[in-house]
Length: 280
Ligand SMILES: O=C(O)CCC(=O)C(=O)O
Image (cartoon, rainbow, N blue to C red; front, side, top):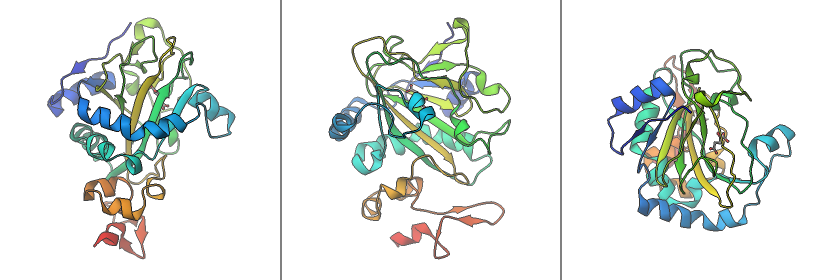
């Protein structure tokens, strides 16, 4: 079995990046401390209870991907201040996103903040790369998306800890949906509640099989370069009133600001103005 390295909360960015460059992913312990983790669980409890397991897409491919006994929902910034403060604005995660995404973009925004709770008996998800969401944009040598899987409960190999194939971030650009790897090549993001596994949009991974009778409660948070369209339409869920109550950086990450490219292009404008002017 392959391994993922665990670093302590507060580890230097240089150390995090060294491990990510080598393996494609790194576990950071206590990335989401106890108090905000419990608050987040409380903030999301009603939605969790109301969410029916399985895909809402009605599309066969996505039904397989989402899993029949996995609960997924988004809109976390609309529902939880703890999400905004400790996950969306997590300084370690933002520093990693700055490092990988600002090389070839002038900014990035939230791709999705998504509960991924894998239920009892759920088989493993097929392996994939997150960047496969944007097949037109993938290219060797550049990251377009960076993700973190926060463990809201303990992640173990038997309850569906994320499966990661270290070093596959270095394989050539290609749409990856499915694949088989030997045991020696396969790592599991086993980690105590509160840890986060930060990973490259290029590393091959997927939810593990849950052979237990409990739920594996995960929260995925990912960012995508500002010149691509995110998976989740955040500003259609986080309305202007809610956005006005949030820090400026959170508003920008949630799509209440525009994108200015190096070449002078401006996108996501409101009547030719930067969308952030709505809050002046
Ligand atoms: O739930 C997990 O551990 C990973 C899920 C995942 O990679 C995804 O749905 O994109």
